[in-house]
Image (cartoon, rainbow, N blue to C red; front, side, top):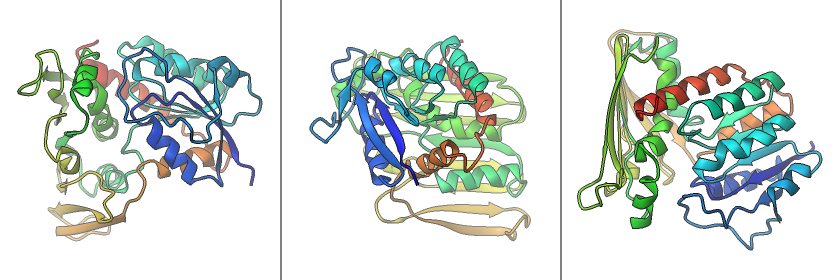
Length: 336
């Protein structure tokens, strides 16, 4: 089967290099033709490395857009450049994986989605839990009635990577770490919440010892009719990335994960407690094992490849979902 000719539009995004590694693992599916060179970009960003000297053909944005027969583009520029960089590819009709978040204002992303909708362009956003089997199980169990409707969700995006430069980077966003990281949580929480967001209370500040404008600590309480979500994140929590947890209290039970994801060779696990039997599960406690996870992005990439090849339909319902998540994020950031 023909490989999908692939462009990486930038690699300055925090996920850019990791995404490239994942794509290259699927070398029978994707052929990376070139990468748009954004190493000299002055847009604020933070990344561990830029993969020079790794066999990448580096081109300008104009050269990339002029290349024929491009099947898919990965937009991995610095956060503030994502939507603008994606726009020409959408107008050209090229399927894309667009990293997150999608802008501190509302209209540019809405325009991008409108173009993709009109042209039926597959648009996949880089929210990091979309292929997570445990998170997908939670969503199904809420929506199919096994757990019942959500009452309250708690989730965290704590970590302790980065350095002082990273703390300064977070301060370039009006809502700091909440804008940059809690969007991953809101992406999977939103489909489980009925109705419109009623009220949101967000606090954003600096972790102890950091300059007051660091914006590297946040908590947010989001309220929907009959349900709430509490999300928080801090970039100064020792072991935080391995302790990112998730708990959903629902009408018929509780779903809880000590770690939302793990790639340490140990299986991803969760606990579910049901008040009464539902679906395939009896009342009581269930220890769930989702197996050993080796790649955060592979599931998404395989889905995108299947859509581009016409093996599965373009999931057009995601256009509205993505707009809803963006609005929820902006509201929780105090930006709209």
